Length: 340
Ligand code: SF4
Ligand code: SF4
Image (cartoon, rainbow, N blue to C red):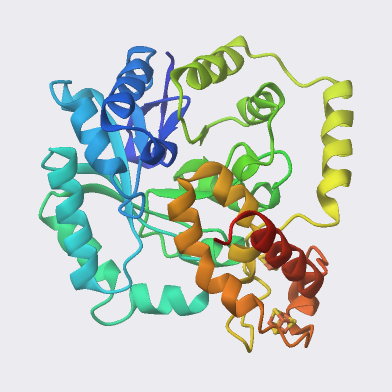
């Protein structure tokens, strides 16, 4: 498969990355088989994270015996502090069976508080700089769900890559973040190319992304057939037609009233409710092992029950979501489908 330059890192990466979330659901043997089949299709870019349970370990088993220099491996740590960050990175290298990771990302810096912790004294960024000096990390990067926060961090020019949600229903990144990444010559990884499970039309989703030069879609892959289909779409280079744009518009209109983009602009909540987690419940359960999604969300569901309907969040939501109402719907869905 064609390789493209990943910004100023100079890394040459396949036009599609292998997203390592869904292999958490697979047995180790199946995960190893799926990763290897995707590598054999020409994918050389793998993205995982400390937070994805045993994903790093399964990827490590899959790449054992492969030529390390032909692979571009990205992982992430969500740590705020240097000590935890370094422990995550050392574990990552051990699980992957490698001495270095090509791109290591601060995971999900989506709020000012998180940014201050990561970049503060003894923060994770100090750990990142030490790791670069020690040769454990070639190129530092970060991921975020919040475009303004990401723009602030990009402008520090400390990073070689940025990872943000980008798909045909979540296009906020194309206004400033993608142009800034191009200007700064940073690699851009498009998180949630299928809208975090909302978009089931892979043809449309990847034709949309394929038209955006230089960005690398990072779909979570559970079956090698999914990757085969995506590669066919990307390499076919079949531009979107006016009819496709009409379908996209119709889909956006249908979702517009209730879809949470997980940007967290609605925070802080006086009841400390993880609003985006609760509103994204169904898609988390679709993407992750159910036990993992349930453990991630159950505390937020408990908190969601304490919503005092102050509506402070609603005034901050750029998508004008009826948050207290949607929280109630998510809680009701949880009670009907998940709670044991
Ligand atoms: S309406 Fe509910 S969710 Fe929104 S800020 Fe108030 S307490 Fe939090
Ligand atoms: S409720 Fe609105 S502001 Fe909050 S995360 Fe979702 S889309 Fe963003």
